[in-house]
Image (cartoon, rainbow, N blue to C red; front, side):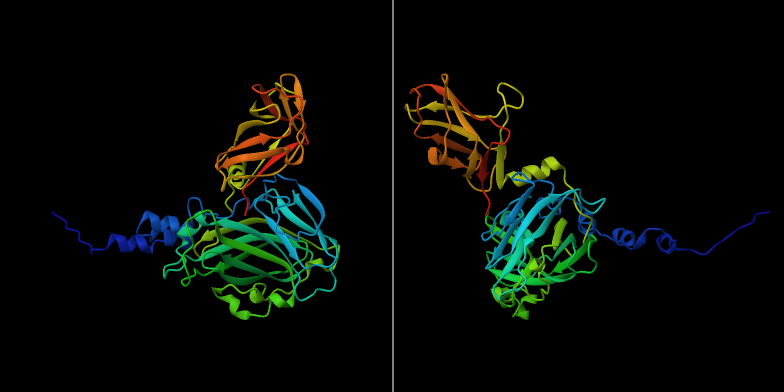
Length: 400
């Protein structure tokens, strides 16, 4: 006897979609992605952080400075991080690289301590911390077009001064800006902040060059002159009367106050992903595009030698030669400063000071150094230029 069994037809795809899959919200979104590019955009895969040294790990110049007023923009400690104050009567600050950082995110942070207080804040006083993103690194955001990319900035901050802090974002080529605020809720705890910035669909595009593309500012104090315009909450032509709109605290009103920052990330899109920890070597090389410090050593003919160049004595009193940079810098660098520099030639020594060591020329990947007003030297001889002290250095600067 033949037994025939039948069952109704069913759609396998529909049945699979009904299964209780432990994929979570993002997993379901990934499964619905039409292309691999859609999936990459969803999880922000690949190089994503436009900020350099957001982990505060690189500090070529120093690990701390004391009692500084920062009346002009300077990078005193952590590479790429600039500080500036304006019109302060009394306040000055200590700035340091700290090992205090949110666990599992970073191992270093940038700390600002108040060294001398400014209890009464005038209308035109300010103090900020900022980083400039090179235009070549953000020109593809499409600003000035209807398809301009949104941005998300995330960072970890800690302070004993709770309250609302102002930030502003500036694009130089179209000369436009927008402001936001964040709040420190609990004194003395690391807190992660996430801020969304819409793409700027008006204005001009960001030029694809080595100029200022996007600059991100954190205000620590700001007088009322910079808080009078609330229209700065959307992209508009730059006007400084709104750049600290919503800022409420004065970090400088007590010498017990401090503010710390680390884990800074600026990424394309509306999703704040986990902080991108690049290797120290990669981060260091990115920083060297803007600043290179060649350090000295003691002794000679050793693996830690302080030698940086071989020069030729063009005359009895002048020597020339190249110094090659470890990376291609943003612009042909300037000689920012030097210390413990010595030139050795045929048994003679010359220690230049001031303008006795200058650049005769510079390219992005090398410079030609010239020593002037030499003594006891002989035309036609070669010589060895060294930084022959562990505290010595030569600084090459391509910062903004």
